[in-house]
Amino acid sequence: MSPLFAVSLTTGAIFSIILLIARFRLNPFIVLFVTSIVIALIAGMPADKVVGSFENGAGHVLGHVGTVIALGTMLGKMLTESGGADQIALTISRKAGRGHADWAMMVIGLLVGLPVFFEIGFVLLIPIAFVLAARTNTSLLRIALPMGAALSVTHALIPPHPAALLAVSAYHANIGKTIFYGLLVGIPTAIIAGPVFGRFAARRVPLLEENPLAAQFVSAEPPENMPGFAVTLLTILSPVILMLLGSSADFISMLHTPLNTSLHFLGNTVIALTLATILSFYVLGLARGFSRETILRFSTECLGPTALIMLLVGAGGGFGKVLIDSGISDAITHAALGAHMPLLVLAWLLAVIVRVACGSATVAMATASGIVAPILSHAPTISPELMVLVTGAGSVALGPMNDAGFWQIKEYLGLTVPQTLKTWSVLETLIAVCGLVFCLIGSVFLP
Image (cartoon, rainbow, N blue to C red; front, side, top):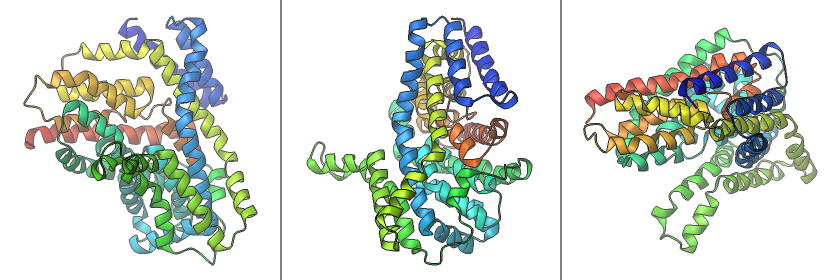
């Protein structure tokens, strides 16, 4: 397959999805599924392999993200019904001031996002964003976009996040230097893409008046008997703490010992979230006077609005898998390799291309670093730590529609597809471009 044909086919598919969903108001799941089938057949993929490819991609994504969304939604429901989200929102607005609530959410996003994937951090923090926006009478975009920017920056740039660690290993970078440089690049990037852009977008993108997901997390008035700030914060951070323990297991204990195995088990994403959700049933439920029947009702009714999100997340994964299996992704990547450009720019561009082709920032980072790492060994003057950062920056570019985060943002914030492109896709592109620019500047001044 020629690179030009692959690029044209991918571009046409993306514009078709936007047009069919935004202009003709067709069901997004049907549009993603049908578009995936059509481009696979046009690319020459055997007809008997097409549906299986889509199903494998959708199943792979949903196997992880679907469980995370379900558990995170239950935890969020307990936070809101108990008044825990109100307690945190009111404390943030009181300490930071109403005019700086977006900055406070960015800082929280940076802290929570370090050990967890974007989807997990998002479902943990979005209930607080809903309540904080309502209590401070602030646009939800102004609160939620800085949170999302911070989570995306930590996902891409700062170890010990798993995605960044993949590139650290591939480039043989020093992890200490990578973290230090990551903070130098990541903090100003999060500020530009978060509070600065969030305020700009909030003034120009009006949200729908009715948002069923926000409505289920925000009551008319804060509950009178709210749980304490410390116990609520501990409940939210408990999965983060467990995941940090899991990622540090090999430093804490000997490999393959019972303690090492137990820490890895407890640090597993799903196990950590499950334990946190069970903890919330007691700390924010039974201990607050809720009956078992009421807790069951909370944990059941909150899942209804997430059904469409799970379907769209799965469809995005299926779309990405079809691009890979049909050879479209490889053709585009090989085209980028044929271009002669500085190594930092090449690593960034490859990550951008793989990101658009498959949707996953982690896959984009792993693929691009795997391709460029052998070339880096012949370029001793280039910092491997900056290579990690620039690859991570490119891996979040554009916020494409085959990324689970795109549909999470759209549905949770009550946006249309064009609004999501104007806000989330632009925010992700800002992170990518700022990351590249700061890394190029760093290559001049940093050793």
